[in-house]
Image (cartoon, rainbow, N blue to C red; front, side, top):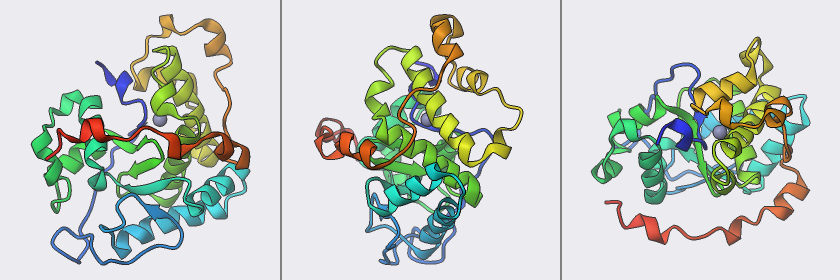
Length: 254
Ligand SMILES: [Zn+2]
């Protein structure tokens, strides 16, 4: 399939290069510390540099004028989502990324290479996506500026409350368009300067290679649909604990 499958990712609008040159451990992420401000997908693989990287984005969200930003920070602090870097993809999520980015020609053997210092595998994924989510797990590339990372987190949290990993596929390409438009709209609320002069409908259609002719005109005219805010209502109706387990997919990982 085309990029229409890497829907759950925030596409990389500007080139980013991951830097993972922390001084601790063999792979740079194992100081055993813990953040009190967010929950990591893999808390056993962490370090101060990564936590500080996330904290700066959380600072941007907490001090932002928009309720959307504040609610996103609160959702993260409450542990409604878990955050990590692309190098810490779970085995099952790596398999999904591998499937969604066929052009990278990644193999199951690449999974253990994700955490190698300067890993070309992680770098290749980060060149395609700023963020990725599945269930309530959010992964972000390194080296984003704090406000950009804040916007990426808002984008991915929006996918989580809308259960995009399911809804995205309901009625392609329209469902993908709707889910991405909403997430990008949320991102633009947080970082409007980044999207100044950008037609968001075109942005989504082009970057996700969605066929405009297959998206109904009324959807293109009024592309924004609920839910936008990760508020108490949103989390009450998004029961992450009920999400299916990943057992069926992990067998392919090394
Ligand atoms: Zn997205």
